Amino acid sequence: MPAALKSTSQGRTMVLAISNPEQRNALGPEIYAAGVEALNAAETNPEVRSVVITGEGGVFCAGGNLQRLQANRQQPPQVQAESIDGLHGWIETIRNFPKPVVAAVEGAAAGAGFSLALACDFIVAAGNAVFVMAYSNVALSPDGGGTWSLARALPRQLAGELLLAGERIGADRLHALGVVNRVAAEGAALSEALALAERLNGKAPNALASIKELLNEAPLVPLHQQLAAEREHFVRNLHHPNGGIGIAAFLGKHKPDYQ
Figure (cartoon, rainbow, N blue to C red):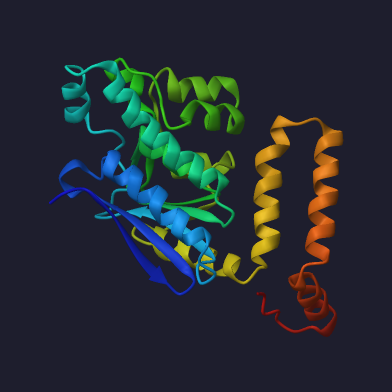
C-alpha cells in the first residue's frame, strides 16, 4: 500500500493521518506535498477552524525511510536536498498556518516525526509515546527544524542529550518540561487532541491567527518591535466583528458565536 496522508473532517477540525503502515508511517515527498496542499486548502476554508496531525496504526511517525535514504546515496546530492526542501516546506507551512495545529502522538515519534510534532502548536501524547532524534545513531544530522525547536524549548544540555546522544524521551518527561501539552491514556491521544481542537474551534479565528503570529515573531524581535506588533493586532481585533461579539458575550454571560 503506497504511503499517503489521509484527510478527514471531525466537525470543524481537519484530521490529517499519516498512513504508511509498512514503514511505520515513515515520511516521504508524497506526504510532504499532500501536507502542504491540505493546509493551503484549509487556510481559506472557513469551515475548518483547526487541524490535527496523527499517524495510523498506533504509531505517529518513524521519521525518514532509511531504504530511500540509502538509495539516495547513489543519486546526486541535489536529489536528497530537494526531498528535504519538501519536508521543510511542510514544516514552515505548519508554523505559518493561521489556525491551531495539534499533534496527536501514539507510539513512536522519531527523527523527522519528532520534528513534525514539534512544529505543531500543541502536542497531545499517549502515555506510551516515545520521542527520539535518532539521527546520530545512523551517522546523520537532524532536519525538519528539530534543532531549532529543541534549542528553544529545552536547556542546551537536554537538547544535546536528545540530538547528540540520540536518547529516547517519554511523554511524561516532555510534559514535565512543557513540550507536551497533554498526556492521554494509550489509544486516546487522537480523541484528546480532538477535544482540545474543539475548544479552540470555539474561539475567534482572527484572534488565534494574531496570537500565533505574535508567538512566532516574539523570539526574533526586540521588545519595542513586539510591543508595536501587539498594539496593531489588538486594535485590528478590537474593530473586527468578532471583537464586538466576544465582549458582548462576556458582558451578557452567554456563549459567543464567532464568525
